[in-house]
Image 1 (tube, helix red, strand yellow):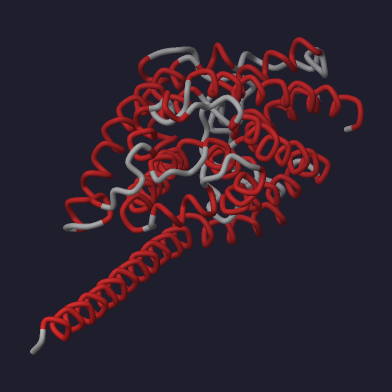
Image 2: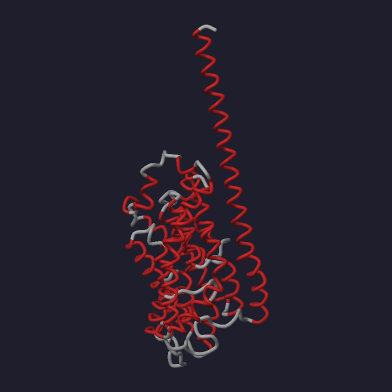
Length: 370
């Protein structure tokens, strides 16, 4: 074989080898995405879609979805104590533990099964389109703010933009379609309409503005991937090892602080939700106070509905009720702690303040029209 023919032969082999490798990588990517979608669909059906379908009929027929997790059927929660803390913590985690497990699974799997360039393409731009797409993706998830937090962390570490990640995180609890349906049957469709309009503002506008406040290099958890974006070493190798490397930090850096914060808030909930009386009505100080409480406190998905229903049965006005309805599900101290790894503190303060202000404005308007 001449030197010219040998060179041509080597070039053909190189092309064939490259094509084979590209085909194998493409198949690996497709299998990974399909595996992620399988876990997401099966998990969400078991944890969210099926139970909520049944609960919708309960809400429609009885105009209730259960007792308030804060105070039961009474006007005020029990006094602060270790027992009070433990009882709330037990009730809370009994309600959310399946969703917490699913959130950790999805938050870790998105880092090892979904290609980083896919996340960048759909959710990686600091523009309104990425924010809106992420908000849309949040709607079928229907998780509470803490259960969605591990997925938000996973998306950020996979190079989603700050605004898109924030839209997904806020969109889960605020635009939850099941909760909005329950709300219409239990509280009123006016409450549901306010939730939709104000929720869209929070998810789209506030999240988009968060992009303007973020310098990715300020966040080591995120910038380490951006600075080495051509390195594909994180997308190859033993799947189980890569998954454990994603899952274990997620568990270690979110769950302990989460447990402690829930315990403390459960203990002091009597200070955050004092006894209601008809004199409270729609006073502006009550609206402001409960908007602050709602922003700080943590609840399971849709728990704001029986909380508001119970408090209104003891004389709380529609204005403070709407303020709680908007702020309770959106953020909380535990959920803010869980995502602090991937957002600057100034962004979290901005979002929490925005939630509080939106709650106050909605409460003031509701006091006039409901």
